[in-house]
Length: 378
Image (cartoon, rainbow, N blue to C red; front, side, top):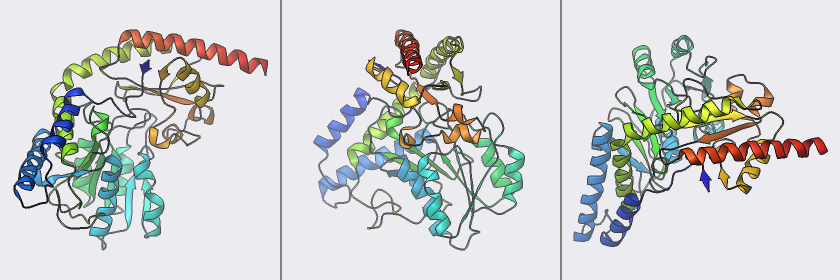
């Protein structure tokens, strides 16, 4: 089996799963309870919160555990909308956002908000002149992802945060889901920051929203104070502890892992560029973990299934928008319909081996020629 869909989800690291199992068995008390077992659970929860805060260089009071990045993104945008009802009903974002941001747009429009999209250059980078121009319209929120999940394009959110704060009163939200554990993150100029543990070898079902203390937020889940006053419910203690563990391990090995991924990326890209039927969609601003390609004339779903039969697993788009016919990211970059409707995402990890990539390349080439031959027969 060759797994090349790490941007959709990663396998759980053994140490992380061990932490989850240990906490589940040894800390049976509800962290909201006032008895001894509850207080012991609460201590551990606070330790997990403090560890996440320390790693990200924020305050413990600024860490909100959620069920994942999709919830964190919804809490960030809608929480601000409800907390600042008198602010201008104008929001800035991009056409490169995750579906958990994009899918909020119809609801926000029903609430009377105008959603405007910041222009992108030919590489998918934020057009700073257009951003400055649109900041004059007094947006209440600016939401930009740090790394696009389809093409891997990285935005300089630290610099963008400076521009936004210097030229407006907008609250700056960053979706860091595809960044945390892969590249260095700096939250100094960011007001709200979302991510999910299963992207860096943690468990599914746990994520984080970092909310700077100066920002107001209306909870989406009500029921009283829990881990945070901004999200009620029984604290998922084992998941919280495992998330903190996964984050610590990912950051500790970040430099070594990035170096390995870069080497694998360069090898794979060089090989793909030699295949005449491959169009490379990722560019110099994409992180090395993601290579997006198109194969004209072959439906991406058809290639996906052909590779699956050879036990090679990649994706057509992001896992959360795989039902879309056209890549919204490629469409945003004004790629023609043939390219944007035939994209495939290969996402690698430090766990990937050169042998796996060689097998993938062989399987890809075989599948292409098999499918091309079949299409000629019909």
